[in-house]
Every structure is written in structure tokens, then in C-alpha cells.
Image 1 (cartoon, rainbow, N blue to C red):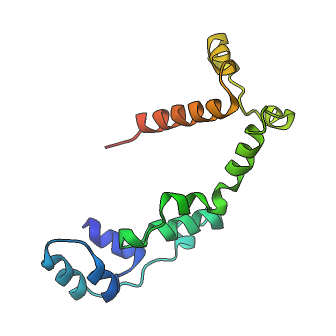
Image 2: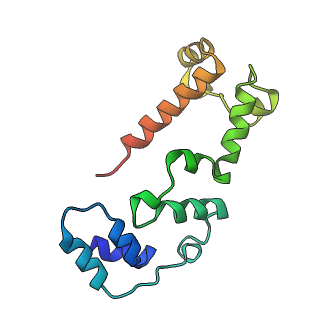
Length: 145
């Protein structure tokens, strides 16, 4: 059922893609090769509110063969992350600019004085890493199994 849903979205793999699969069971290849052709869906229609860079990321990650998917390095080069590169470039110049402060970056008043003193003791790069780690921890806390 899951494979059927995946193929409904990304479309049927080509004979070349099936041949390159690294699976020990030949029956998997036979099953895929004999399955009816599915053209796949237009991701813009499935996710009409997504930006073009976000759709581009999906197109490059939702590939049948893992070797055809973008690597994390390729992913981070996407224009989807331009804003993060701009913010990082601002942060790593040695101080948080007035513009980023006005935008609310590094404003953790709701966390209290203890958090402010901990954050102030770190370099801007360390602050970025700490915040990234905290966001990852928070996101995985709500992850469903």
C-alpha cells in the first residue's frame, strides 16, 4: 500500500532506475517492472501554496532511487535557503545588526534572564549552533512515530 501511494505521487520508475536499485531480492525488481505505468503527480497541484524553491526541493528529494536524490550539500545550495545564508552572513560578521534585532532574531525575553546570560556568553556562531540544536530537539519532541 505504501509503495502504491509513493508511485502515485512520484510516478513509476524507469527500467534503468529499477536496474540500479540495490536490493538483494530480484522479485522486487520484477514486481516493479511488471506494475502498471503511473505518470506521477504535479507537485504544484498537490502543494499549491508552496514556493517554487520548496517544490524544487521536493522534486529532488522525492526520487525513486536514493542515489538520484539530492545530497544534504546539494539541498543546502537551494534558493529555498537563501534567507538562512543571508542571516548567517549577517550573524557571522561579528555582531547581530540592528536590522536583525528589529526583526526579532535573538530576542529571547520570554525565556528569562538566565537564558539571556547564557546566550550572551556565546559567540554569534555558537549562538547559531545552539539555536539550531534547540530547534532540532524541539521538532523531534513532537515527531510522531
